Each structure stands twice: as C-alpha cells, then as structure tokens.
Image 1: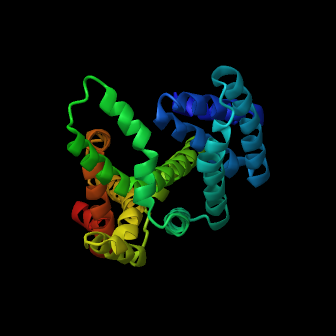
Image 2: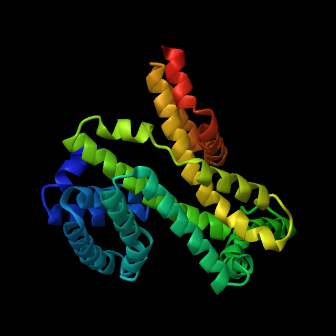
Length: 304
C-alpha cells in the first residue's frame, strides 16, 4: 500500500504535491501520517533532483493552503508545516543527495537540532518558565473538567516537570519527523528503483565514536542538578533519537546475519510504539555501545 502511494507520487509533480497536502491534512488528526508526507518530499528530491523537489514543495504549499482555508478556515497552519517539516526534510535530503552518506546526513541534522536548542536558550533566557506560561490556559481548562482527578498541587508539579522538558521534546519531535521522512523516502527510492539497496545501506550505518562520546557526555551532564545543565537535558532527546536510529540499524543487521525470523523486528517496533521512552533509551544505548563493541561484526563471526 505504501509503495503504491510512493509510486503514484512519482508519476508527476502534481500527484506528489496532492499526496503531500492530503497526508498533511490527515496528520492534523493522526500526527504520524506526517512522516508519509515527509517521505514523499525526500523521495521526489532524491529521484528528480533539487529543482523538482522544491517545485513539488511549492505546489504542495499552495494546495495545502487552499485546502486549509476552505476546509478549516486556518490558512496559517500551512506555514507551520512548511517551516517545521517540509523545508527541513527537503534540506536534509539535499545533504544526502550531495554526500551520498546516510550517516553524514543524520549527524548534520542532529547538529542543526542542537543549534536550535541553543538558540532557544539565547532567545528565551528561561525556556521552562516560558512553556509554563504558555501552558497556563490549557492547564486551567483541564482542571475545569469534572473527571480531572489530580489535586491542584499535583497538577502544578506535573506541569512544572513537563515544562522543563518541552524544549527538548519539541525539537526531538521535529528531528524525528525529518529523520523518519528521510529514511522512508530513501527506502521508497530503493524499493522502486533499486531493490534491496536501502536495507544494505541502513544496516551498515555507522555514526562514529565522536558523536557517541558527545552523547554520553551530554547524558551525564543532564543528570547533574542545577539550572546550568537544563540545556543539556533539552539536547539529550535529540541525541537519543539519533543513536536509537543506529540501534535499530544494529538490530536489523544482527537479525539478518543470524537469520532470525522477522518476528523479532516486529516485536521491536511494537514495543517501540507502546513503550517509546524506554525503547528509545535502550536502542540508543545499543547504538552508542556499537561504536566500541561492534555487535554487527561479532554477529557475523558468530554466525560463521
């Protein structure tokens, strides 16, 4: 089904733009659908080149703006999708196209994400306080609900904890959308034009010891008390998602080299959906340790 969607999108720029706009509209109700729109942008750019890619994004912007105006009376959300999703995916796809390196593309994207976190702290001296203020009306609405069970003190404690994590979670969410869009687009490209090419490329992904050391250092800093380390706490989710991708690549490679049943991969993805924080941390840990222990090579040698 998804390959059919990708194949339809590659029949012309208008088809691709219509799919991007339609998937983005659906994402307002089902957010993960936005990954499909991002994947179509990546696929079109990788296959047809930068000029065609930006043309498709421009047409999709117009189509989505018209639909959002007439269906939702909210044309402004077009800019939100354009800035937070479509243009970042297009940009990182250009990096992949020019470097021919999935690892470089992911690392550059993570670096940009970290710079945005730093930028947030420059613009907002206390991002947690800003988020706390922004969530005020929403919290009041929740407390007014008759089935809201938390006491006021418990609610305030929960919201304070959430506001301290919001900057990192928001940028990690944007980073995840870009990365999944890029991977999906690259997988579609291989599926349509080079069967099996993406599996080999993805399973050989190697992010390197340098980024792994930075991730460990940021993780340890995030555990330290004090407002001075808040920025590390907000940088950490991006790095965890980055190395979780590495961890997924390791698991795929090990399952393949050990000739295990694909049910192992299905279980991993199901657990990732229902236990996302724990699984992201576990996969990131695998991804970091891979840089020194080389689980994939050990698996190949064991299989022989």
